[in-house]
Length: 315
Image: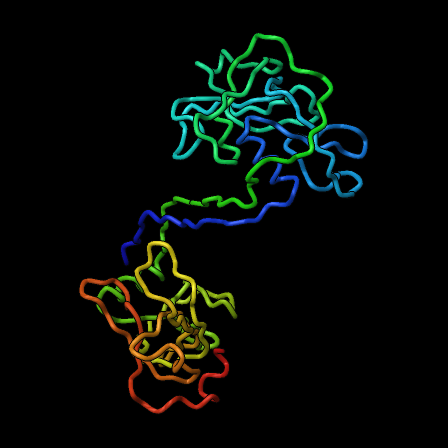
């Protein structure tokens, strides 16, 4: 029986978004140690602010300043903080209704243990020493036994010098991937500079990479078939944006490649040819870097281009 592979896998990318006037004022306000909410059509104050009324869907623009103190409405203890969470020691996730607001803000509460946290406890914002215009400008909440803030929030025009107009939110997912029997065999074959797929016993199509079942017939596949190594470019795109941690100069070409004998195109980078000369039907072959577990890229073979009818079903 083929050994099943497993390995840690990290999917990470920065998500960049622009901000509308309400979110811009809210985040810029945090930088200036000011918490802004927005007044809804029924007069209640929403914190964090939103741009449209959740009941009437009308546009909201009336900003108000609320207090930096508030009340815990509910909470959950986090005994094992993870990477990039607000605190490095155990803490409580809390929903805090700031004085003057009708809704609650989610953040961390610095407390010595779960016995020190309860619904209804009074807390206040602990501001970060360095603030940039992000929710992390609130370092956390901390217990507070002083006077409450004003019940009626003060009007605010939302105007600040050098407003924050966009944010970059990093997204990351860490997990252990187990490819299963079919993909484990595929990966082990690649380590030997071979490409194998699996043939469906019903429709007889060969799928690369194999998934252990035919996506058309829905039945298990087990018969291994070696394909390639040469193939045909079925379609492609020109990449003009340099990816983080990827040492490839732009522009470059990423293509779908139908390997000879396969009924499903896989993807790979095309090199060894100017990017503006890559075309559908181009015949290519893999290039392996020393010690690599998969092809580094595909290059032209010098053969005549494939006829469109031979690959049109894989476009």
